[in-house]
Image 1 (cartoon, rainbow, N blue to C red):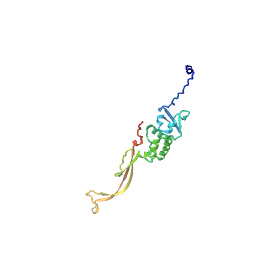
Image 2 (cartoon, one colour):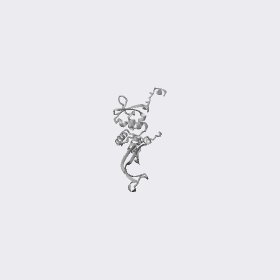
Image 3 (cartoon, helix red, strand yellow):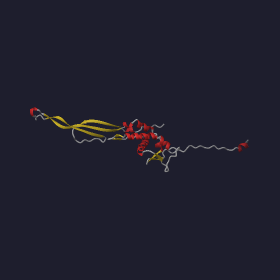
Image 4 (tube, rainbow, N blue to C red):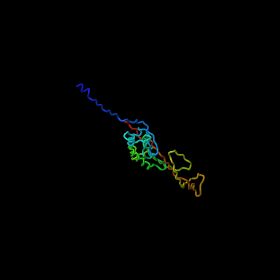
Amino acid sequence: MEQEMASSPVISRPTFLPPATEPSTRKVILQVGEQRFTTTRETLRESTFLATLLSNHWNSTQEDGSYFIDADPALFAPILQYLRRGIYPVFYDRVRGHDYARYAALLQEARFLGIRDLQTWLQERKYLDVVRVEMVLKELVDLKPRQAAGDTECEFYPAWVEKVVYKVPDVTLAQGINHEQVRVLDGMVVEKRVVFDMEKCVRAPRIEP
């Protein structure tokens, strides 16, 4: 019995090692169109597309080690800003207002990259809650130069009007009339103030489980 045990071959079982994982803080270079962006894996993890692209399942790196993404770099820049700091993009100009065409293009990129929170924010047009315009109507008293704050724009609407001007008591016109009608420059001033609510364009902090 002992001889049989001694002569029995020893069968070694293979040892399975877990796949190597990349450090989340490792620098990543993305080639987006003709422009390069440098970031980390941790920053890109919210995007399902980018997380899959950087996984070990795909050998999708270029010869120089970068990852190529066929997209517009001008649209990817605000997306990366959102992934880094949770700042939602707001494309607003005082003269032209919101850039709706750019919002629509960015929404398609958010869908393609699988960034659900940014996609929802754009679909629900939350950017309209960030910027509001307050208007105040005032009477134009004189034509003296006025100063306005940097976020306020004034529009003048002058007009000639007739007003009754009374004379001093010791000056009386013909037929006992002590007043006369004169034409004066009058009008209205419309003050437009742009109010930017910065709290509404920043994502609320997330509580990790």
